[in-house]
Image (cartoon, rainbow, N blue to C red):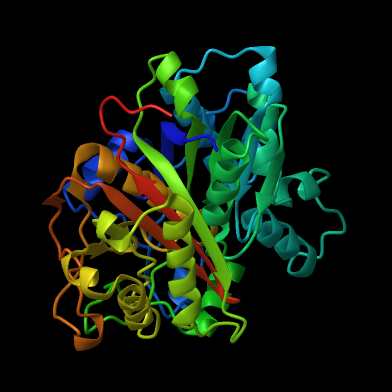
Length: 408
């Protein structure tokens, strides 16, 4: 089987408009969670969110048609443009035919749906915008990337709630490793700050009134975020042959279903996903130095994830660095795995573990090294990035540092 590496990264979220701004925000522990900027925010029980503030599509898209894409597709395309430029691949017709585009999104065109339904039900307008369906469809981001860059291999969007991007990344990885594709553009996006969607989250009562405090005893819930992230994957042989810059290797992927409860997570499902990722990568618990946790900051999720980590890693759990970047950029739902994969790849590349921000006091149920409040220099040999979704759908991706002189 072929080895797969990351040669391009792109991201846009509340922490920045590109990967450099994003990483600088993480290293300086600058939060993107700020007071909500949306209509009727005063009618919500929560007041803050990780929004892409001051976003103007005209800064990125020349044509009126492109500016009409739903924001979730715009975020995906912006991050893909950055990642592909970063990778610097010289395209041939053959490579375009064998490059996959695999994205993830939970809610897709939520902004468009909310706006059109408001016109229909509140303003009694009789007609929708003629492009409503193309703007709403979940595969809009993947399709736009394919068309914009002429990529003609397998293309699809996976929607598995908060595990969407990790499922997309794992699928892209497997396609390349197994010879179905030679390269892939993968990640995810979400634009969820539409009032109807925010009211739905309000009703669920899992959003913190102020901010997200993963693993901290006084945590009160998650905070919503938005954005897009893209990774360019290719074979190690191809990357070495062209002298590409390599951030990290994607080494393994595991996915499971809890088969138990629609919202309450199990310990066994996440544990089996992490173990599956390790097995797929041929890694032992002792090979992992860092876990980018799902870490939503809810009372139930965090101790559950800690128990799952302990179940897999045993005594090795004590030396692991485990952090959640959601404290800084919010929970971006279907984009979470993509954004956190970029954070994990940059952590390996820069030899720095991202912090768990907003941490105030230890919780005996979350008794791991959660890297509180400050980034930490660390040579990361191997890492996992976890995503666990409503519906009990779990996905874990294993990454590995590529040592000098590596070959297939």
